[in-house]
Image (cartoon, rainbow, N blue to C red; front, side):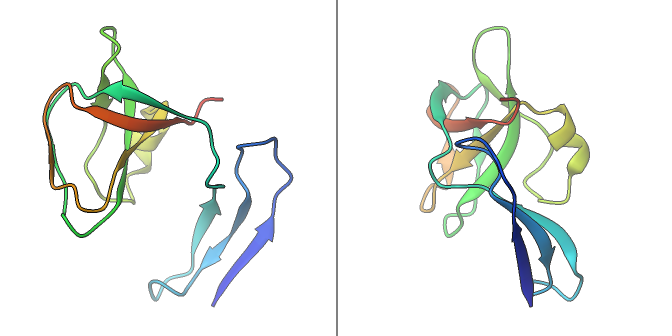
Amino acid sequence: MTVVRHVAADHGGWAGTGKNGAVTDSSGPSATSPADRPSAVRPLAAPLESPHDKHQVRRGRVNAAGEVELLGGPSSHLLHSYAASDLLVHVPLGVSHLAALDPVTVWSIDD
């Protein structure tokens, strides 16, 4: 059973927190974010591969050239790379490869 509690937040902020037991046997913490969070489009610093049948949200930061560098791997449990990140990178469903300098949509997590 998934339990989510509302969190008071500014527009575009985190919308809820809770424990998620519906996806796995463990009840790990979860956070939810609204679909209208402000986003930007930036060039990707290096190519990336993604499963064609998944929408991935990867961690990253902007380098000195203004390009998005991915941090850590694609697994969701890599909190150390989230801590070093300043944005989330969206790799849409149906995309299996992006080349360096391809545009990607990002959400800032430092605002």
